[in-house]
Image 1 (cartoon, one colour):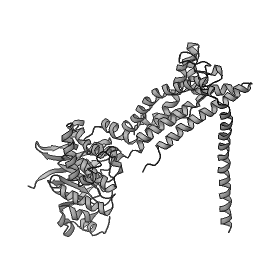
Image 2 (tube, helix red, strand yellow):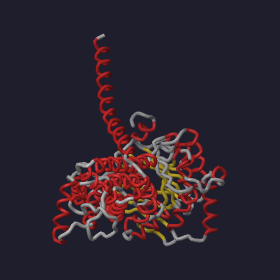
Image 3 (tube, chains in turn green, blue):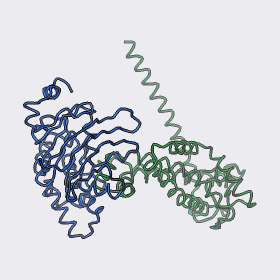
Image 4 (cartoon, each protein chain N blue to C red):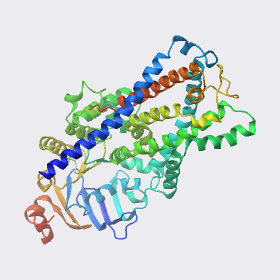
Length: 269
Length: 260
């Protein structure tokens, strides 16, 4: 009788903890939606920051994220392929894997400071290139890790079957192994894109922010996340409302990308 | 002298990072157009020996081969352990095909799966590919089931069908030898029966070496049987002799189930 009671107590406690945790999540989402949607107007999307909208911020954030991805994805994938397919057991491979993992947990603000010292201070001004570089540095280790792990999931028998048919190593990797890992790698890329598009610290003192619409990467570059950081603490009501609107839009974007990733890895068979 | 397609001479094999050899001084003949079965308890070297015959161990560096494995062909006898260049190994594997325990369809259409080895070998002519794909699927007894689904993904097939696809894929290259590594262990009894029928049919065109845990399968299918235990070739003879009148006591003990 004692055991059944204990079981019930633990069950209630764990359910309660789950409910408390999830209710915070719902609280955040609900507040965000309520405050965000009520601050949304057509002009939010047609105006730039200087006129109380977020158009240039959206374009700027996406521009930097997309260019960063264009650099990080090929580098990360090649490194991941090299790690898993060409040098799997070697000492060098495990050193690189460890380094990559460390970089993934490096505080984003530290990366921001590093890029500031190398790509901002010597040039005397914040610039969009520095922001892109910071985002790229953050993204590469994630892509390496995803590619490495997704390739590891491909059973070795598949490679052996390819070799047994008279395939050379790089053909097998290109035509069979990567194809087999395609969904996992693509999802990994998508999720890391969602991650960097929501980053603030790496951009704070690299590309900073810009009120106006511009595609000039040599100067300060518009950023949605840095704007939220700034707007949230301004004294006037309009700024704070815009911060809510921007937060809502950012959250919706990240949520949609994540859901797309989940949809792609849904159990098809 | 009987008609040999392959043989091993004093062949020993040591895995990378291990001191003791997994195979010791194996002298095994493989007769042409016959089925040779390798039986023995788990971990005793049967698969190791099979995988040496198409040098697939080379995927994992550091292994040590000793002795000879000879392949007989139009240019006479060739020790495949001497092959060093990747192109030579590729040619070897086009002559000596392999089927694995777990069916391994590639993530592409059924047609592309069967055509894969041929495309690797440089066959480009579309109608030649079509013909050879059809013939291979017929030889593997799945043409009728698959002919209207050639462009669909191979991953949608059942386990037995996938294994027959793998056999079609290998047969399409017109190999001289086919190595089967426990090809039916992962399949249900009905698929197993179908694959066994298929293997028996294939021996007309190909010489077959099959590793199996299933002694009934070995005695049903094979012409010759080799009993391998702890890395040594204990006995090799015609299948009937091995199963009904073995010369070595150890063989008799294994056959009658006293161990393993």
